[in-house]
Image 1: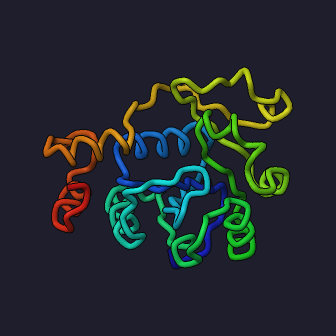
Image 2: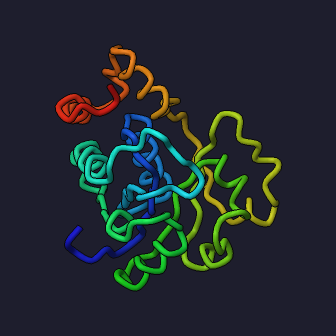
Length: 198
C-alpha cells in the first residue's frame, strides 16, 4: 500500500488463514452497500480474540491475502499489523491509520459475533470515535443481546453471504480433500506450493 488512502475506507481485519471466497463476497458486499471507496484487508499478527494453533507465518498469510484480493481494484492489502507484530488491537491499528491517512474516513467491518463481544475489546469507545461499524450477520450471533445504543451505530449488511469458514477449509485441505470453489485457485496453489495445511 503505497499511496495515501482517501474517501470511505473499511478496515477488514482477520487472520485470513486462508482467505476464501466468503471473505471476498463479504468485502464486496460491504463496498457496495456502504458506498466504500476501498476495503483495506489487514492480516493480524496475533488476533486477540482468536488464538489459532495452526496459524502460518505472517508473510504466508499476507501473500495469500494479496493473491485473493488482487482482482478487485477497490481492495487494498496492508501489512501494518504484521510489521507491528504482537497482539493486533484494533484501536492501535485505527490510530496508526488515522495518522497516516488523514483524508480517509474509516469504518470497521466485523461480524455479528464480534459485535456481541465488542464491549470486551480494548478501548471500544475510542474505536467508535475513530470508525463507523459495518456488521455482517453470522449464523448463531445473537444480535438481540447487543446493547441497543451500539446497534443504532452500525450499518447492518443485508444480503446473502457465503457460509464458508477458514476452519472448514483447513480441515478439508488437511484431509487431502478439495477446497476448490471455496478458495481462489491462486491461493490454493500458493498453499500447496508452500506446504501449508497438510
